[in-house]
Amino acid sequence: MITPTAISDTSYTDTQVSLGGGATTFYYKVRAISGDGTRESPDFSNTVSTTGLYEDRPAKLAEVAHRRYRLDTSYPNPFNPSTMLRYTLPERAHVTLAVYNTLGQKVATLVDGEVESGAHQVPFDAGRLSSGVHIARLGAGGTIHTTRMQLVR
Image 1 (cartoon, rainbow, N blue to C red):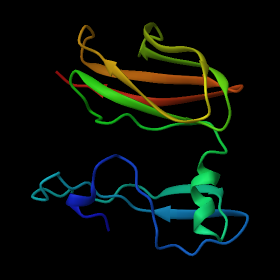
Image 2: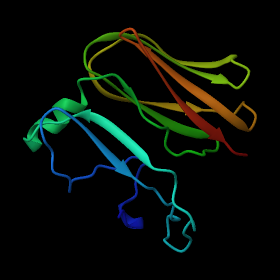
Image 3: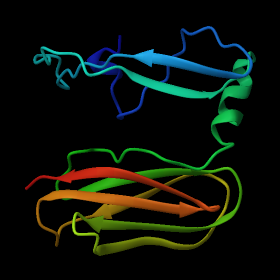
Image 4: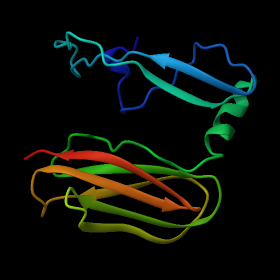
């Protein structure tokens, strides 16, 4: 269980699993709790699963995480008027990170150029956009990743 004081992002690292070599799938159920711990969602989410390659040595976990291209969920999400987009590159690559509305129109280009390997974060200010769903799209290394963001006014 994640306590309200432990929440600083929309991601979670499970340090209590037994990691074996090869592909492993973990299943979780998620329930939302307000930041101050006073309100709790009555229902759990559908089962969420994640699959990845893991190694027995904990020191290798960070290295394994950087072996793939990844676009994380923006934080905060929902947001007003700005949020932070985080992405990871396993190697230097040409990166395009853009934001689209639900009509498929590009509303912002955040990154368009060569970027070194590692973890990166880019602020997104939606001050001039209308409320609603926006899609962040990361193109890098021949891969495409998207994440949904909710702008609330």
